[in-house]
Image 1: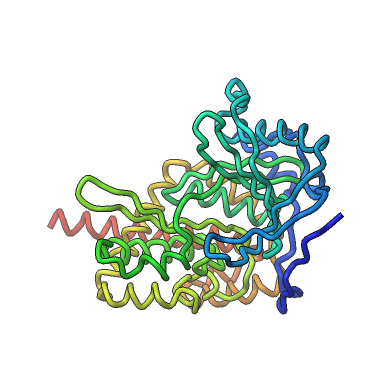
Image 2: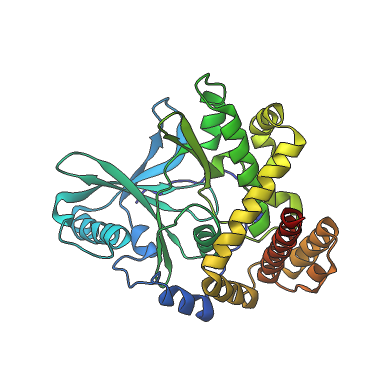
Length: 362
């Protein structure tokens, strides 16, 4: 049996450990329709017969391997994988899956989660779609759920005993966008710069780390007069894990330098601060709309240990100094730091509301 050899990683010992999904989080997932019994386990997908490197259209190694299973295994596996796709897309309605088939299964040899990418094809029109099967990890689940609740993006995913199923996030990878699209004359530069500021703020407020350019995508949507631009995270492995505050600010990654320089060239400081405040206000409204659910999730997160005590102490000190708020120093878990960050945001937004109302009445 041929197994893909992962590339040498000089930082292998620094990789984030996988954290199990605890009982409280699992109960939350069940309550909100995220937990299902699935016919395929992660370990079952590792039983391929052989593999081959997958190259891009430019001939570059993608660090993915296309895996091949024995015919008798594949026949049953194909049925189960299309069934999982139906669960993800139509809440399990399998009435249409007869015309779907799995065209390819890829295995990623790079990164922390070693995901499988499933390519599903519609036999009638050859339309392709993707989803991912990964080992379940509490950090990633919290990241997905916080993205679903606090961002403009809805996240569709399922959790089983040892498996996490994620929908494909559509968009242009950030590094590809920087290389090929950033200086397109048809691009609305101000809208892109505005979205960069908002994305940076969203990551920092909810403590989503490692948003370097290949971990997010740029979604460009034509509008009736122009285009709308949204930046979406696609990797949630580093939700509230690092002890370094700058790790949660995409602007400080050298991989994002081109985007940062672009943003600085388009916006002055007062405008950038305006967009930050706009994003704070929108997050505040989203919390109000799903207050009970957000509270329940944060309660689970505060009980879970998804990072080391050393990292928590380092991050809480930095956040206390940044916000000039000693309440951060009382936090013992990463979940408590996220909750305190959101409480600080709410307090600031409510204070500004009171001030603006007083100004209007004068």
